[in-house]
Image (cartoon, rainbow, N blue to C red; front, side):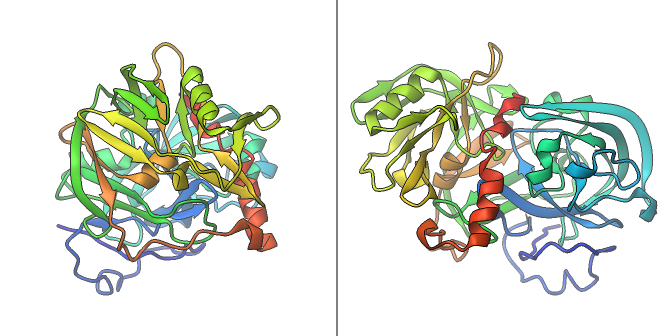
Length: 398
């Protein structure tokens, strides 16, 4: 059975899926769509929910596997500052909830979350794709950092090998239980630059997104079945070239591209970017005339245009879309975040343990207009600044 659904705005009171939802969905040749990918700053929000409790915004993270339906359990949260203004999951309102009770702890670069596991029926709203008996984390403690992050939880899209407690993530479980036609999900990020409170792309569950993405250029086998990890065989731009063969991952939870220190320093030197000690990242003029950064994956070259790695953050102030991060001896050397995902659709094949890349269709109806920060409203600037303050922190869990 194929599933599809249009974008919808998250609500705070949605006790059941609307009975008429399926009837309102157009007949499309693609499976289940997440709500339109709302890109607030550099984090990506869309909605999923348990069948009976409330409707939440969550980060869709292909670089994480642990599924936290909600960081906030209404009966148990003990960090009122971190939980303020969040949509909370209330298990007492669910007829299908079971308490697992086993504890979990997650460490982040900015703090931690801890709580216990629960079990409930989870649906990708507003479609009919539902996963029965899904184990998820209910947080009883959140680091204060999360108070200013406008999300209610994390939906992991990697493999159980890197999941806390080895919990099977919802999409993997949907594949195992044959709830979808194809064991594939596609990530399409439409815009270049930052948009706030606008649809910025699509997550497609169960197949290829042929409305927004072209033909698959190539498939690359996973080097490890944990994160979406594969071999990167080189990078070049201008007079700089590096042909080291290293591990890289595709990660929707990382807002920039992480690379080894020497690589980032050389790229910054090529483009005249300067390092800001206070912010811990590079900046360059927004009107910089810079060439594409070209990555070699398999036998193909993938070009990242300057529009996707020169990121407006203020009036005539732009951030360089690369930063250095040490993931340790066993971690990936590269983390391909938003600048790469905006340049190419990423197709994740759970069944054959491979990842594919496709050029986005320029005629896509879903491409929004990016914000011109010189004319941004105070509300847009404030919303962006809240998520911008921690743009690199998602990567620190590796």
